[in-house]
Every structure is written in structure tokens, then in C-alpha cells.
Amino acid sequence: MIVVLPVTGYGQSAVSEGQGMWLMFFNRTEINEKWSLHTEVQDRSYDLSHAGEQLLLRGGVNYHLKPRLWLTAGYGYIESYPPEGSGLPTVIEHRIWQQVLHFHTLGRLFIEHRGRLEQRFIGDQYRDRIRYRLLVNIPLTKERMGPKTLFFSVYDELFVDLDDSPYDRNRFYVALGYQFTRAVNVQTGWLSQHVGERAKGYLQLAVFANVLHSKR
Image 1 (tube, rainbow, N blue to C red):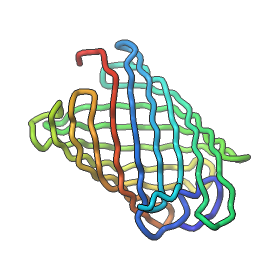
Image 2 (image 1 turned 30 degrees about the vertical axis):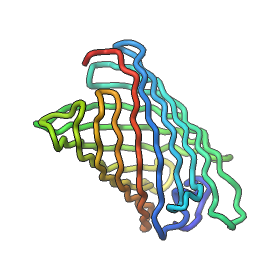
Image 3 (image 1 turned 135 degrees about the vertical axis):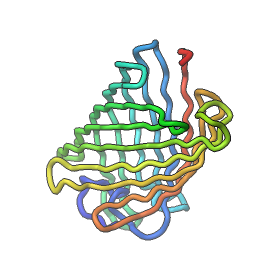
Image 4 (image 1 turned 90 degrees about the vertical axis):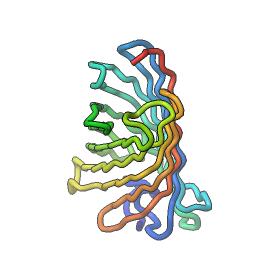
């Protein structure tokens, strides 16, 4: 991906060749039946040598409107690093975001719909963006998702820019995961990110470790 504007972040629009890598940690801590906290850390690299591409820290507060319908508001801090030797500065983004999350089952499939609105303060620029993601988890060793289950995960996410040309990017993800307990799972997979006419693949390792109190 060629460096075009700091708005996109170098990691999103620089270095199209090769294979990148994302290391990710996610946590949801339940406060009670109606409220929970979301935290995540993502360390993104240009390539498998772990050359720094982007650091993303994101937090939020979830309100469980219904057991399978949640509303979220939060803040994200993002540092995007220039390719080595480019002489360009690091780009800092402050991001406010709101989200609607709805999930349900269809037969043995677990299906999640996620709509997100972002207000992005990138250097001295401001952008609005909408994202929609459809995710499906398919249990492989049991009839339903649950503890001690090997599963296949796939999602597609479309990003729409409200300020310029509508299409921003698209991400397609496939992974194999293992649900250790109701609160903990690990996934490893591959993500293809398309920005304009350019695409790049990323190996991914994600750990989900939640603190849950409810029985559902």
C-alpha cells in the first residue's frame, strides 16, 4: 500500500507486498446483567519480522439492552508508524466510537452483526466512518458453541467513509479457534484487507479472556 494521507495511517495504506501480522488481546468484564466493560490491545506489524505498523488501544462501556442486543460507546488511541527509512512522522489518532451488537444462532451457527460509527481525530484532520461486520462461528467438535469446542470463524467487514468517496476498505477473515471455557478462547487465522485496489494479508493471533459473572 502506498503512503497517501496520514488520515489512513501508514499501516493501512503503506507496503502492499509481503505478509503482515496482528497480535490481539480482547477482554469483556461484566459489572452486572446490564453493564460490562470492553478493552482491547492490538499490535500490528508490516511483516513477519514484527516491524511496527500500528498500535491500537480501545476501550468502551457496553449496555445490554437485551441479552442479545448490546449498545457500546468508547474511545480508541491509535499510533500508526511510517515504513522504516521513509522519514515520515508517526501519526496519532484519537477515536470516539459507538456500536450496536446483535447476535443469534441459526442451527449450529453462532452469528454476530456489528455496526459501528467512528469519529476520528487524526492529526489536524477529522473524519467520520461507518463499519458493518458479519461474523459466523461454526463449531467443529460439538453441536453448539461452548467450552472445550474447536471452531471455525469467518467474517467480512465493510468500512464506509462519510467525508470523501464512500468506500474506505474491506476486511475478510478466516480462523481456527478453540473455546477453552465460557470466558476464554484463542483464535489464529488470516485476514485480507483491501484498500482501494490494493490488498494485503495479515496473519492473526487473538486471545479473548473475559471476566463473566452471569450464568447465561
